[in-house]
Image 1 (cartoon, rainbow, N blue to C red):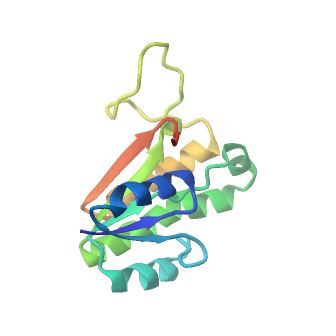
Image 2: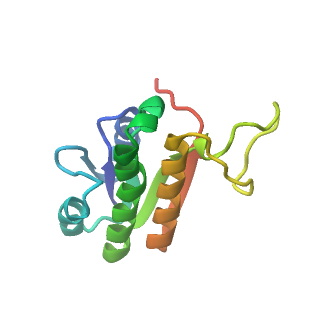
Image 3: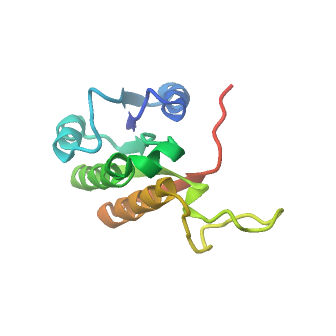
Length: 155
């Protein structure tokens, strides 16, 4: 299987390359090879590769900075997944989009936990843009899987 992993300079992308490289053909990319906030950049990089799967590990994750850099947050966290989804759909690839629990309010009492059936209610610009990215990914690629994670760690 040919897998394109976007955002390989980050912790998640680095780990995904390690995990998938042993059994699959993995092509990792990040800036400057691809700018997910630019439709043309996404299409030009991914289309010739014709991957089976695209894993989106790229995100603007500086939660506090998202509050003041709203346009950049939207470009990377919402428009980027849209362009990846459109390209995945065009080449017949599955899109795996990594999101966050910040799409929820975080107000559930402990020890309750969120499920995919819970209503979303982001309280920060980061959560808002990540939710928009989920919606764009699901809307623009019929073969999309969105994963929400609460925390990342690496060993």
